[in-house]
Image 1: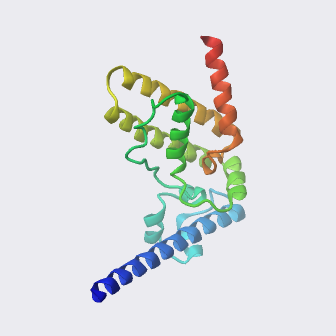
Image 2: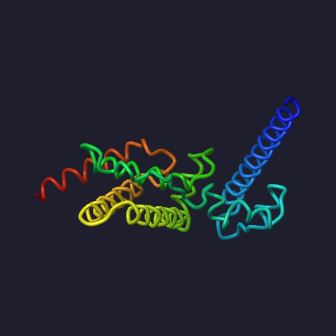
Image 3: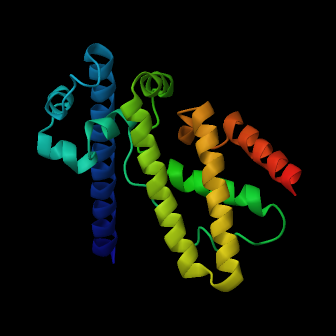
Length: 205
């Protein structure tokens, strides 16, 4: 029994060590990318240079990020919990709930959240970074659309898709006001965008 417990402890320790090492490498790559873009600009910054600065190989770089833009953003593919859309129609506040779901899935693309002010400045300075952020937002949209199609049918499916499209519009509106909004789904830009859309929809009815 003691032997089994010791094995479990060793496995947990090794797993924790691997997780820490992976997190440290992720952070080094992200910091290297930000530093190099600040020093040389995005165009002149290469994947090889980022990997060298972080002390890893190009191959290792691509185990963490798909591109130099993603390394600067600290971003990857978004993820979605299995039950993300199960409670979309539970009670009042469905519009705001849809917006929060969209922002939660979109913000899951962010793998590293340090140096937000510097990253924000780089996003404003380089359209490619803002465009890449939008790419991740569209990936989140596709994940959510698939989840809705699997969860709802008939009239509910139509309503769910309409809510998703409205929530995506809110997200784009908020992102236009705050390009780094996915770091902070509680950003004032989100609430302001919700209010603008709610007022506009009310005026149209």
